[in-house]
Image 1 (cartoon, rainbow, N blue to C red):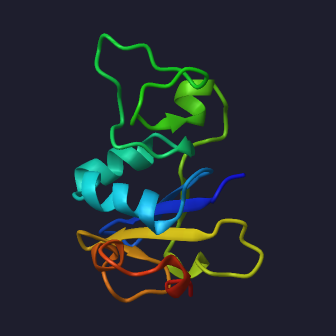
Image 2 (cartoon, one colour):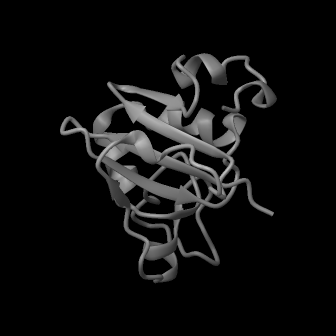
Length: 142
């Protein structure tokens, strides 16, 4: 069973690009990876460009000599539904602003937002890095 999450970036225009991730969405896993490995706009935009993920990894791509597939992924590499399994309709969703976050009926447990150079967990005013370094997941839901 997955712990679902989304990852979004707020662009300078105010528009938001968002992807879904099926597994390990909790702060101690996906939150930690986002803070430690996707900490600048260029890296975040490259991650979001992958589209929806099965698993968030520390790296976007395997080494050039490694074969990476959905069924046989390289350790610590993102597993993307489109790139690695050939699925369609996995491109990032685009929104006019962050007002879409937090409405009832959403199926993911965690929504991560990159804005102004920092990751935030939806509903928290503190940067995610402060949550990764000590907060309990049960205390950071909105």
